[in-house]
Length: 339
Ligand code: PHE
Image (cartoon, rainbow, N blue to C red; front, top):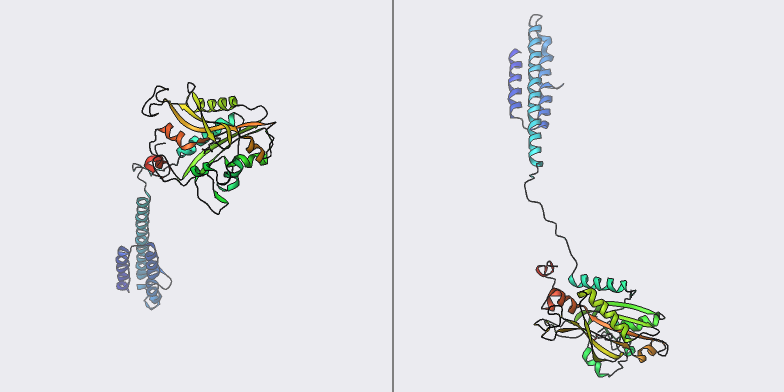
């Protein structure tokens, strides 16, 4: 029996040395020290021993048990600290590594300038009117004194959904909507997308943006139009900015004008940017044609008004010295991230 006990101790210690996990350790504890374990099996045979042998073997058995227990707890501690070290290593953070860069979005230059212009007009007491991009022929042309067959329609060819429904070619289409819905005094701007069947090049796109302005009240004159646009341009380009009106023709305004702004690069001297003109053409404008007022149920004997249509792309391109309009629509981040 003595041999058996010594053998148990020896094989328990060997097994513990080779054991690699806490679960295995528990199995070993049951195998050697458990109720049905090897040590208990030996002790059960104590009855067969003589009275002299019994205390000797009993003492040895106790010694073996406590040796195995000590070895078990030492191994447990070893394995636990190894597991802890492993965990710390796996979870460690190297604070010297470079961080992950968060890319932050920004406004498109068209949006930035559009909002800036909206703010300027809101400051002058205008409100913002919205209109559909898919529009009836009536609002885009007919109501604006451009009946079927009018030659001016040729310059604004567009995309037709049906014979009567088209993609609007100008934000002027919002004028009639507003006049049908509101009584004067009216003071609105209407920014938005417009469409024309133009071929794409550095200065043309089948989709671009306009900002329409419309003011209707008693006693509105061309001077109000000029003052309003002057104020806009001063806010956009600085206090010393000047504008000039050139006679022009639009079917829905009379008289009509094209409005140029003094070249902010050469201040009117003439340079490459303004093609030696000293001025740059920015928008069309005029006094709302009496026929348009009548079409929209407003009495031209009582009320008068002005309207203008501003090309947003042109302003953005001048502002940031962008030579090619296509850059504004290509969504190339190398371009967009400069703004
Ligand atoms: N809608 C005109 C265009 O696109 C511009 C304009 C608007 C002219 C309002 C006069 C009055 O060319």
